[in-house]
Length: 344
Image 1 (cartoon, rainbow, N blue to C red):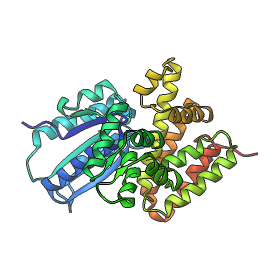
Image 2 (cartoon, rainbow, N blue to C red):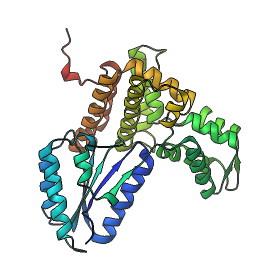
Image 3 (cartoon, rainbow, N blue to C red):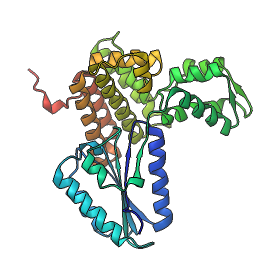
């Protein structure tokens, strides 16, 4: 009998995790044809409502494909039992090409509640670890090779210093080289400087860097961030989903930074094996930690999740306003929503 259609994807390698979720989504489409797709956040959703959706057949689709993010927040015994009961029933009832439901639990943490983990079939659990520096270098070298380019070692190192070191960010930034040079070109440090430094495209990571710039005061940081947001919104990378996912990645990384500092794990080796490879990145997160403490960081993550839910519920019309309000709360309120403050 096949395992229950329940998966658990954890870890901070955001790019590879997103690619795997997309692979499963495409697989479900090939198997079932039309599918209904849903994304929920565990800290903002009732597990009972998700189970109800999993159990109720759709009038217009053959299957439901549901992703629940922030799965580390699923800790209540009753919620885990509900998911476990559904998984057992789904395992027994699976029939090809008939009404079905797939559920992917996703977390940027490396682990979730042990009882939750235990209800997921062992073969359906994957941890997407942050790549080591040598792995990132090899991944990047292979990526350019597949695209028909070669690249100097110093150019690889420069890219890893300039770009947030997860595969999604690297892929997004390095796609620009494909537009600037012909195939079989060997990319040099000078090319990297021209493409990524002098004409640097704004992204969620440059936006986060602007919010972390402690050489400026709060209003200045907010102003810079708002300007960058406007550039992003007028670019091809204007998806609010990608923007919010990138922000969540940055603040989860800041949460990890706080944890390492609290545990006294501050050597270069400790920082590098936890994804803070370059000096530039270490300096950025040290600055960020002075702006947002651990509690502030948790508030920022909750705000990002809430903004995502608001945009999904209200649609495109309110998207820009929601993002600007989120930026204001991140820059000026340390992640606390405006309604939580009483101005005198």
